[in-house]
Image (tube, rainbow, N blue to C red; front, side):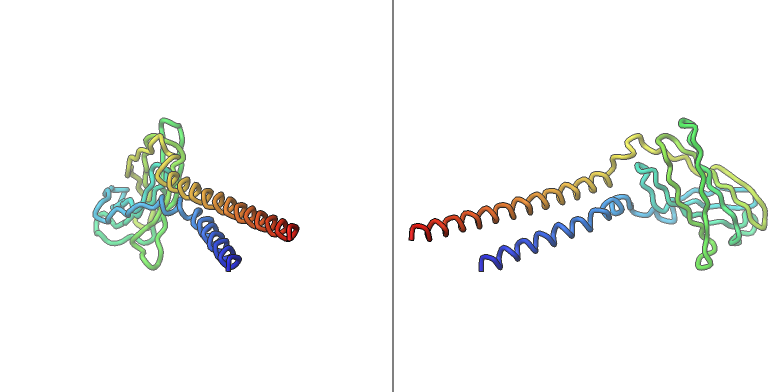
Length: 199
């Protein structure tokens, strides 16, 4: 009965430790995700013959992550432009750093162009949109974004370290519990041998 209890406890502890190990890699992903900003919040710009609405869908500026959706129409007619080639340029004058990315649509939703950018350093960033399509070419400044200086120790980092600490505590407790049980078994075996010797 005692052996069954010990085995059950060890199995349960092993399952808990394994679960924590599986969950830990996802913690930073969960922490990075923020509530999407609604489609009613965005900026409207004119890039040559194009009217472009830029909406931030998801962001974790402390980690330098930015996800955007761009809705491109003909500035004169309001018709959807589905064949655009969209280039995003990110400039950080303080760091003398420039990055770029592209935005793509899909046949499923030809009016929406999705883009993700990772801004690699702190400071103020300007995001420029450059659009080329069958109706022409044009570019414009769309956003100015500040990446804070504490960009590596965010809520995501705290959640990750919390999960890691809990996992370590679980592993340490498991090792201590097994050692304690082994010590008790050894003591019981010694008492049994002493009893037999006296008998």
